[in-house]
Image (cartoon, rainbow, N blue to C red; front, side, top):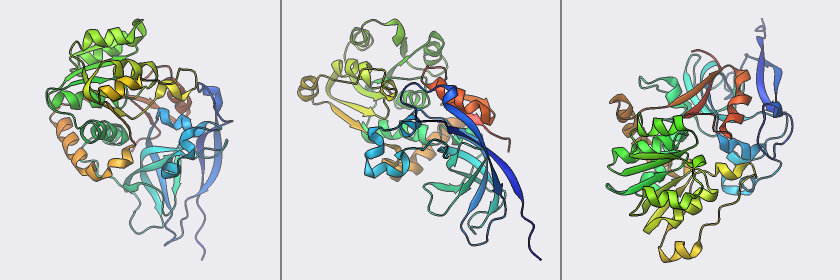
Length: 355
């Protein structure tokens, strides 16, 4: 007797057209498709019920008609352009509801590149899809602090910049998903840390709950170079950059000899509205400043070290995971657009369903 097909309706968020400026909620639409929960044994297919999805500004580069990130062969799987109406993927946590892969069983918690939908079909060979051990921490932590955001902060500080105790560290977008972790890691390492953010509320968060030595609202500063000179009278040793643009120029102008810049993002440049960064290359040369762009997968060899150290910090409450969680699939467009207007505090996450 043939097994009766179990069909559900899977709703997802897609782009209507390519986005070549600031994203708006109206750039997205809700799409519904039938999805069969009958998976052929041995097919390697796994169907996941999405629980938490990470919302990240870099995803905009894939929604454009063209961006330079789409042309780099080394990251094509992560940076290929998204066609209007097709699935959008990002890091997430979910639960297996059907499996044709013996490594995954119904009910398993998993993490990987999930779709912006209620359910996700994972096929063999998909990048970074694994069982998840929650390690007694909230599942939302595994979308932010214990995922790409935290790993990027860890790798940028300790692998790219090789930060040393007592050094002076500047973190831009310091109340964002990566910055608030980078700043706390630097403080725990014994550094002097100053962060920049875009609201008074965020500045107070940095100086209070997150333990930064100081912080400032960049929107209230007419001269960023002078502002950084005031906060770093003896210069900057390490700059953790998520912004690019004028902030990068100002930081380079205040770097010490052999200063290091970990460039993990350029949110001020993603929409094409801001001026491209143009640091003074004479300063870079004569001060022997190292500016290194990097991606999280470059440092997977230290992933276990990162997980061990960060879990210890979280459990001992030496580190705070700040999360900006919205609820429901329909909240994805507003959550994503809000990233480019500084609406979020900490890691932007959308909870799709309860476990």
